[in-house]
Length: 386
Image (cartoon, rainbow, N blue to C red; front, side, top):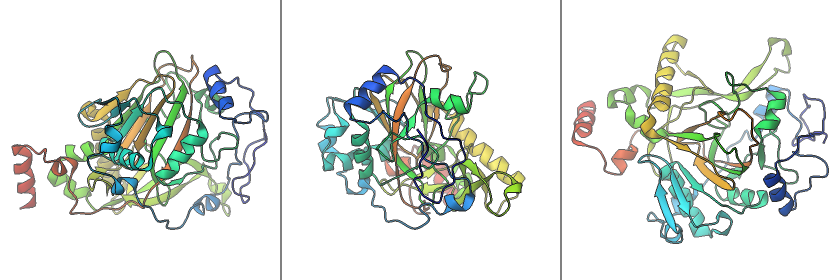
């Protein structure tokens, strides 16, 4: 299927081609049931932009965002009482809801789901019967849907991107030593003027063994820092860059350039009011105002705190038909490629964009907000504030 532009300004950088990979049987069944037209090939490929200024102009304006979590019943009674079971997978991050279909949630339950995601960072639903169209409609509840000009999408359902490692490997070969792709700690779309909020990934096909995804809590990563160290990074900003490179239209000879945006290192979630560390090794480039050597040391340490504290992480084993909804404002994630592409994996993803990141020095940490601070933590905090 020949690429077509999402934005007519884009000049495609790749030769048109029709993908010939065979769809996994569960994926084909799901797409055909949803009425997705597969006759022109799968997936739909938008034209990929070549020049940096074209990408900077995408959504380059302030947009209002009202987070559903701010409207929710703090007790989340409508959502939790309707479930057969609610299981917290770890103390700090990850909850599984059993016995609910995402497509059937009412408005009140959707708001409460937004709050649950804001509190628990990632929420899982197994055995979901959900079409790409329904997935997009639910995503719109959480914010404006991101339409990515470089990512394959479900034909006829703009904004529902295709996560198909077998297809991605035809362009960027992966291996045991260099799995690439999503097999690194990262957060999605940090280069946006208003970056990603809630992402919903539905995997209809998964390997029998392996292919787990890991998430780490930004609330807890911030809480791992000493109160004195928090003062060093509170209010500081960093440059966050895009995953994809582009060319300077006027000076293409200078080689690849990335979209860059300035955002706070520590941000506050509007739904909970809690502070979260917001860095990732893949796309947080440098701290504003620091020398490169200083910035590298601090960012390296902050990423280590996120990545090496297993008690603030959850590792989830997928089953076919499972949905995960996570909040990019308060997490980083990492997809394990330990199945090495030997079995098919396919999913569809919808990402809702949220507010412009902000920092509030008076905001509490999650443990402060929940009244979980122990005597030593209270003493340390008091000493730092004196």
